[in-house]
Image (cartoon, rainbow, N blue to C red; front, side, top):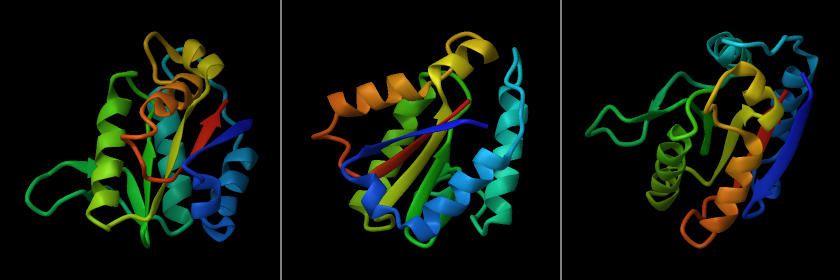
Length: 151
């Protein structure tokens, strides 16, 4: 796959290359045809890659409820989103909550690029919109995030 990267609040520095490079390499080395209806398959493949790299299964953001993020490794939170664009708002609130509670020092967010999202279906979350909206909320969403777009 082809990847693109962006950084929110210096996420590219906050997430060590020791943690980010294996993910970036695994994504680059993965061959996957993004077509209509392939979002679920893409998600399963990326979750498998993450698991093989030592990332956890779903992680609760608080022990008092069942609200989860995709994964964690140490104090780095990770969200993978291949669904409806409205879901990324919940994801960034979850990440910010982990950050405020000192459970995460930084995050990685993986999602399709706009081009890939358009090929997968309608109203799919995309890298370009995510980056633009994070900029809009830069004083509210303060957790450092390394954003990875896949195509």
